Amino acid sequence: MGLTPYLEIGGDYREIVPGVFLVELPLPFSLGLINVYLWRLDEGYLLVDCGMETEACLRALARAREGLGLAWSDIRHILLTHIHPDHMGLAPKLRDLTGAQLHVHAADLELLEHITQTDSYNAWQRDFLTAAGVPDSLIALISGSLADVHRSFHRLSPDRLLQGGETFAAPAGGIEVVWTPGHSPGHVCLYEFARRLLLSGDHILEHISPNIGWHPGRDALGEYLASLDLVGEREVDLLLPSHGSPFTGHRAWVRRTHAHHAARCHRIVQALDGRPQTANDLVAALWERDLSPFHYRFAIFEVMAHLEYLRRRGAVLEDVRDGVAWWRRPPASVSSGTGSPGSRNV
Ligand SMILES: [Zn+2]
Ligand SMILES: [Zn+2]
Image (cartoon, rainbow, N blue to C red):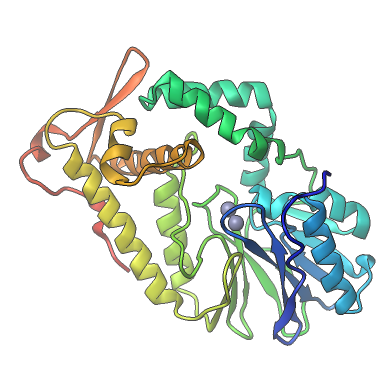
């Protein structure tokens, strides 16, 4: 692990409710901080997420651990809400330090296997971006901008592959793993029934609409909206997110986020009034500001997740010509002006 150039921040911790500690770790990009959680179990502690693979993250976590008077070996379990680098980066190192059992959802392990086969993943991504209508020059810039991120994914060999429904025994009662696919295929939240706590990971973040990107063979947006409803049905008094402060009001958040995606689906269908367009054309229609190559990649995958959602519900059609996908409305809806099935609210 190389030394990072950014400031020595993070390591602050707070006890949110008895036995649940939020620890802030520094990130070298605009999100600034990630919250990891130390949760007291009947035996030892559960660490939820690990931070980036940087010396600064490791030092910050070590400061919090010392402040709490814990030894590394007190951490008996490590659970990853999902395998994005800010959540999983330090997992191998921390597993060595603690000897803890590592828990990851099976769908995210599968995704990680795909991403860490670097040559085939890069070729797959190039083909995907070409099919989305992205010009070769921009594909080269996008690939360059992702090289650092790509290096922070590592193969993992978890001790337990999660499916959802597993529990950890804790003093206030069981903590349940809830599978919430969408932001990533194997994203999980944790729910403690007794105190109505939901550790929401990146599934629900107070001031950010989590990125929902296309994944092969999946309906990422459909899965995400269903996962929001799953969480919306639970009684929750406090949300513990991975970025930003704990907050309340999950049902209002779920309603707002349904509306956000319904509006985006509607704009896509509207933008297809007239000539067929590629996903690349639609990014220009949906984002008025200039996007860096790094952010452009997320925008394309987000548009594709919406197109996939609309295609599966018959609201758009795809024609592939010379390796590029062109999207259009089905004939009956060309003049109707609406037709987005994403306008469902909870
Ligand atoms: Zn994430
Ligand atoms: Zn995150």
